[in-house]
Length: 79
Image (cartoon, rainbow, N blue to C red; front, side, top):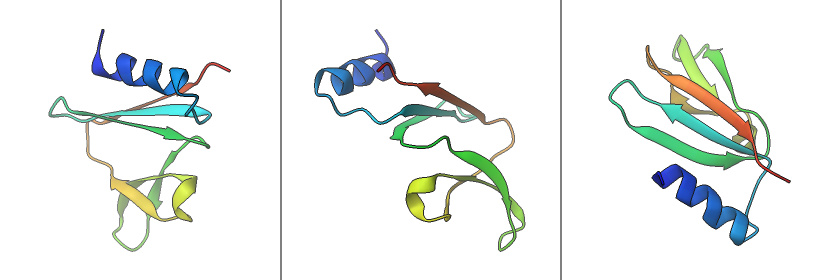
């Protein structure tokens, strides 16, 4: 079982789920995972003039600079 799958199971058993699980796969092979109430999105951020990942939890502030080759996967958690 992968680390991500184990984390998912622990959250379900502890009833600590938000609506979505977000996975960002970086080009170097690292995976960033978190729970989100809303689906995050990739938008152009004018201040840095580049693409950034936004999550509704942070009042419209960018949370992660988007790198070429990243993959964003969002799955709805079981109810």
